[in-house]
Image (cartoon, rainbow, N blue to C red):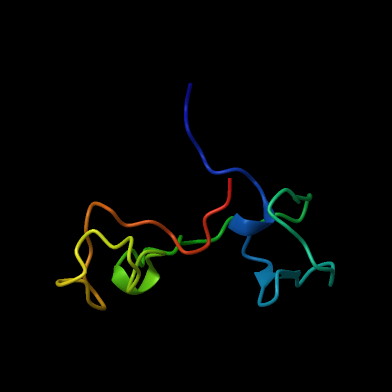
Length: 82
């Protein structure tokens, strides 16, 4: 089985601030997609302490070392949904 990004609004270049579709002018969510889908040219590659849900919390694996720009193997995204 191959793993790939879905054609959902989250990966679409037409998604603008506030989870709004700039083509249709409506608020969208993770499960939405349409024929106007355009894959984002680049995905966010900002995996460091500042974007980690555990940064400055009691769950941080390395609280004495954690700092902006730093990364570790325990990184978890702030906006993770399942």
